[in-house]
Image 1 (spheres, rainbow, N blue to C red):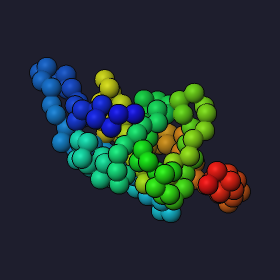
Image 2 (cartoon, rainbow, N blue to C red):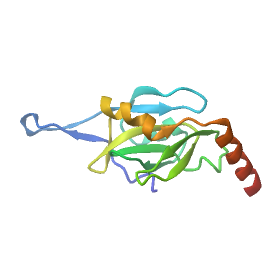
Image 3 (cartoon, helix red, strand yellow):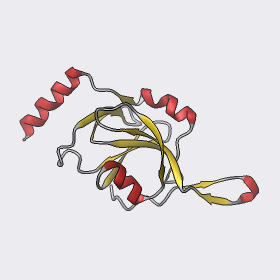
Length: 142
């Protein structure tokens, strides 16, 4: 995905019909080897790239959620972090740090409490057997 495609997140309030730009968004951050934490990060491409350590790419999850990770995670040999489920049920593997946010009107916006509760159904920890299979596959491709 073109890392410049997304604009800074906007959230439109019905309050008096005004559009308000969100300066920070609430995301679930998954750092390799650590537990998930919920953080507020500045909205914008530079912030997103800083979170993942490079160019970003997006994996679309269920419930209008997006997983944002480093587009070159495999090539940079970033550590295997977690598996996840795409919106269609297929599995993917995230390399390096990533975060999850919502998508609304083609923009990244903050997570709601109910979104955070749904994350275990789309983001999985890695069992040792999954890690071993992934390591063997990556070694055979090298």
